[in-house]
Image 1 (cartoon, rainbow, N blue to C red):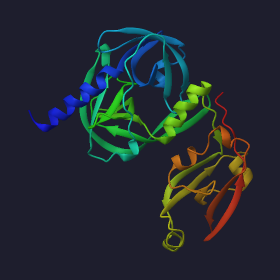
Image 2 (tube, rainbow, N blue to C red):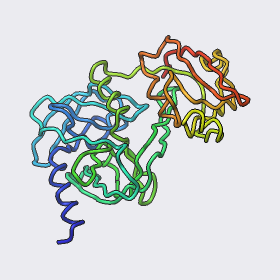
Image 3 (cartoon, rainbow, N blue to C red):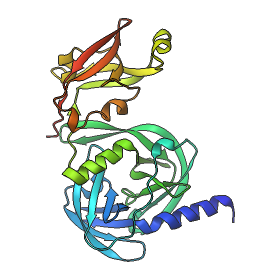
Image 4 (cartoon, rainbow, N blue to C red):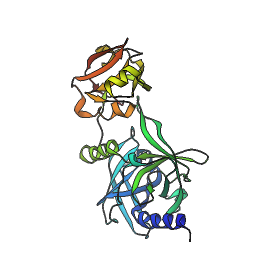
Length: 299
């Protein structure tokens, strides 16, 4: 047996017992035991349901309740009422590399314990999501060519050591699947769902895109890239602070930013109503402005 097959078999054996098929009032999908008595799945899998039934690979069944759901990260946490397998080992998606072997475990088309393998096709993809009137981009989404089908959503994406580094979320097209990464930001969302049942987010009101810094600024600051402001929403906290389209954002809250997640990871509940310093490059000069985020409305 070749090394590739041995690796996939080992990962499948390690992860499959911890992945459940979940059935709810309006649909079904997969979920992963990530803590004792708790499972992680997609928000779009649970929808508005309050609970359902889970079936594990060994045939055992249990009921569960939905503790919290966050459509803007497409994550939901479930509490298991009965017995459940021990949790999987979680990894960190920030350690992934393009071309790395990954294994998807889920329950596509109702087929329990299905395993597919492939590679990380791309990193840093963005997935648009919406809740009510609020829209957001899930950043650093993992793209893989491991086959995903309806029912895989909420299942595990694992790397070769058996650590789960993503929650499968969507079929992007023929041969392309997407997974929400397991990283510091998503785990903060998960812990907030456990504590509060929902995620409150701060709102600035700007649209931006990554852009390189001019050579002289990069040499002076040691920072290679920032975020170019494409649009400022009229009447938003960013507009009131005096941010303009064309500004190149270097830091937010005195923390260097070079992608959208750099801002988003700071826009949680503790930032609402708190003055947030923003350093931008404007007309060749560094300018400090102070924005006070409001709470993001999802209605």
